[in-house]
Image (cartoon, rainbow, N blue to C red):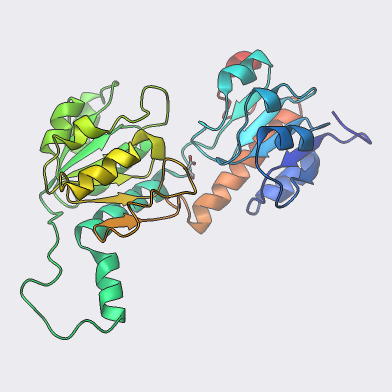
Length: 327
Ligand code: DGY
């Protein structure tokens, strides 16, 4: 759809260079009105007359939006796409694209950052030192948990999970992974990773790092039953999606010392964080920044813009999630 000839694309939020230039070459870019609530009715209204929407993970793109007349493509600037109703998009013949691959290393790095920070109490240690409480070395000060030689359980061994396993080799960790899809034997050998049931992984791991997409099957995959069988020294890391972990159950489990700590980048009701987590010194909290490096976020922006530009020009975008829409 276009108003003076050029197709129009709704850009929900600013993206990084070179994304804007790639989009501007292909279409007239309309910015979503700043401050307007991110609900479906408002997005639908803003998308009127647009052939495409460049969305981000906080934008609900469901039936109301996807049934907008003339809409052909929604390009999500994220690898996760649980904010989009893909079956509804397919029914309305709207292409959906995402940004796989470019954020794997940054996210795996960050999962490891959270793991180390939580194990060695680095956030607590920093505020302790800054606030002048360090008055001399003590044998029992800020004791943490060993990472070297520990057992790491990876829930979901996709690209990011494999990246975490790769990093764990440097720490001589024993790696267990849970995934419906086994790794090829040579990859298991190369990563020194052994497939396990979720129950065994939960019961044997010193660190548990979650790397699954959010689906109906993975919602609350880690809940009370899992917390009840964790080692009391276990540390849980989540850089995937908040609802994979039952946050209320996590708070109760931490209070009951069923596990030793958690490093979280994502939350069940983002941007809200469960109030029970806030005062806990054994929990490290980050604001969904696992992919936030200059290079990665630029590459995500460029990839999303290229996906959209290809769709606007009538082509088949490279990262199409519902190929049945465009044969
Ligand atoms: C994603 O891409 O899904 C991340 O959560 C944000 O980079």
